Image (cartoon, helix red, strand yellow):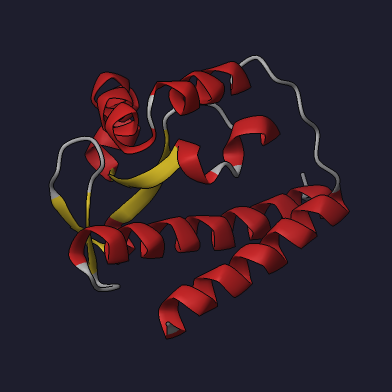
Length: 136
């Protein structure tokens, strides 16, 4: 079945958001764009091998593009260890505090449906942020 224009726009938005998150976290943890540290296990990962993993799981529009809900994570923690949510929560409590972690948890129950245009705007926004981080 062919992808709709909305699905294509969502995939493009995710591509740029993911690249930005991974670049942001590589710079924050290692100081370069080649390697980063997994938020949950502290392993060093190459940018190309890093996932943009979510604390609050799911692919709903409410959590998908939240920068505080998404961080550089190794494939093992993100895909094979259910996101290592206990370690992830500890890291987020340290990084953002209790109120922000509580806000993120509430997103699990929030229903948001973004439009094709909104996904295109998200893609443009994170393409610019990614390029700004890479050239900065």
